[in-house]
Length: 544
Image 1: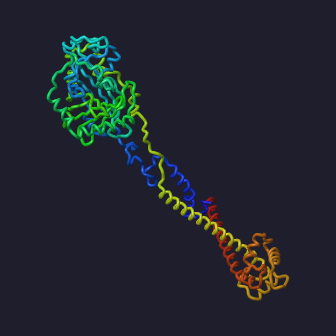
Image 2: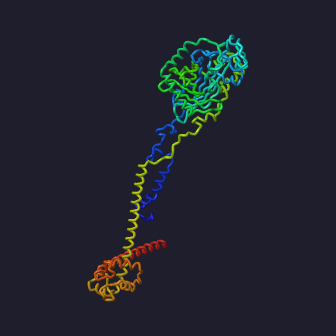
Image 3: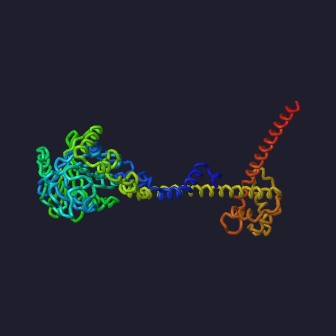
């Protein structure tokens, strides 16, 4: 019916027909629509984990990660749980047991260490190498038992030093917070390899050389600063929980761990890596104001006793890469490290100290190559919005239906009037057989015609009498539908008979009907003459 309706009715009805589809579309929309006019806010508006526009890159999370990156030339001193210099000790003769043992048969003071730190997007990669000087002749003069040895590789005690190191990869997480979690670790970063093994400690031949004053002073500073000690105690417990959540074992035997800046202590990084039992390996790095140096304290922390069992102190200075590589080569030479150990540990040449972690390992935690568990759920429509839309649509639909039915009723009324007019024409034509209806009828004419129809002469025209009268008219029989319509109009009071008053009321304006017909006929005749005239002129032009 649309094309038959008036323009405004047409638009209303069309909108009403699509309104349910509009509502269904809103209710089944995807998560990409969250935060719109009709939908609840996206979770990402208040929770950065769900916001894809929030970066997970470490440098974006905290600038300290970028400052940490670079080449660092360090000096390391090891201490026991009583803050005394660590001793040079024998190691197991068995190669496998020796590799995981914490004792070292070398000088453990002023050990050169080389650290390369790379921060690339979501990843923090650390390659660290320590180069130990050969032990003293006094230590080498001792004779270990059959279960122990005084050398780590195929070198000679007192002649060759040794090098060991490891690789550590930490990544940010899909939480996009300050924590970098351990993705993979090798060598000295594998939990247990650098912790102090209290069994098998021997006093014979241990090397005790003095520590520089700068190191002692900074070490005491780190131990005595109250906010750092509180942060240590608080964070080791917090990180123990985080390790359970973020950490995982890897192919290199490493455990879970985290590293992060300490709030309220500018230029300080803290790391904690889980170990066996109730101990935890930690480190605290304190950077200078210009980030050209840092001092790091690392060690094992007994969570039950709240004490440290072993510590190492690093004093590191940033070095240009050329100087860094030259210093590394010199350290190898100074310690007279065997060629085999040098080739096996030179991360400058081979990229990693040990076997480089695989991409598959790293991607277990790296948000740049794993799918975030924090995905926006499907959008949910606001209750008030959907209610308002529903009410509006109901109003529009109701208005459209009202307009549509008003139009239909108007059309029906129009058809009834046209039908009534046709019936009146037919009735007046039947009357015209006896009298002239071109002018208003007189009372005598109305009485005479009433008697013509009222063949029973009972003063009332029955339905059958009127039907018979009309069927004998000039236009032939009238169909039942038209007659019923005519009868309902003529029988004003619905009595079933038409009295003289009702007859006069209906028939009194027959001359008006005649005038309308005559005007219509005249107008039609004039139009036909005009068309014929124009057609004749056109034909004449063609003939010329």
